[in-house]
Amino acid sequence: MTSAADALSLVVPFSEPAWYYLIIIPLIYWLVDKSAGFRLFVLFLLSMYLNVFARTMPQLQEGSVPLFNLEGPLIPDPHVQAGATVLGFFILEFSQRKITWAAFGGIIFISIVVYMNGTHLFEIGTSLVLAGFLVFASFRSLDWTGSMPDTYKLALAFVLPSALLLLLPESALYAGLLLGISLGVVFEQLKIRFFVRSRGRRALAGLIGTSGVLVLLWTASTFMQTVLSQFLISILLGLWITLFAPWLFTITGIFTQAGQRIEN
Image (cartoon, rainbow, N blue to C red; front, side, top):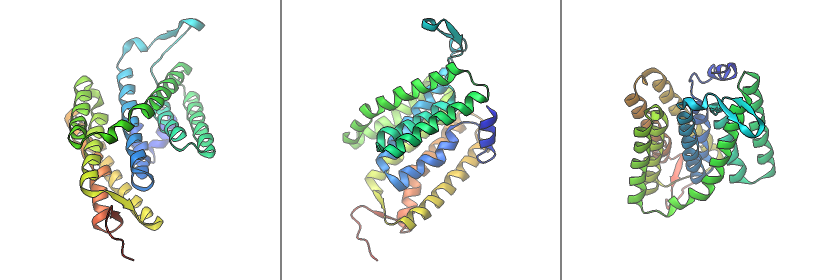
């Protein structure tokens, strides 16, 4: 882990780049757009899964680019890939000039910081290419899930993360989160269907929801010693973000259920 990441760890004391974005992405899901937040979650977790997979491949430790007769490691850097995935999603999702320039600036900044801390240019380049491919592919493949029957959604929510875990046990963190958020989204659509009532309530929801995430992240850093514990705690974290927190927001009146009459 680079010294830049160590500096971030003073604020959020976890080693995986997922932890930093697990503070940001839930806020998009709760406060901005449920659909966009969920799609970003799936994209981010699949991107990080592929990053873990790449880091287990020894042949990528010393790769090469024959066209330019260059050699160097081709393992994608997790911090660059995570940042490029999230910010690249913003570019295509919101399509606003200010957001586009800010996102490009963020990607460049992350890449420069990581490079200055000793990461090889090939690793940064591989990260950017992989993240870019995943972002573009996601916009052609994730929307179709919205029209799936609920039983198919539940089956997919169980089968895909479980298969990913079996293929790569080192991915227990991301497979568990994918299972948790997917199940949570399905049941939220069936039972809760929340929407935000005011800006003030958004701030309160963000504070409560983020506090829950931080508590679970602290718990995870303390007890995630085995693959099974990583998987189970990650499922709980995913369920908190997409199901338990929205349920808490609706029963306390912070959020309103779709179809519920709003009383002033």
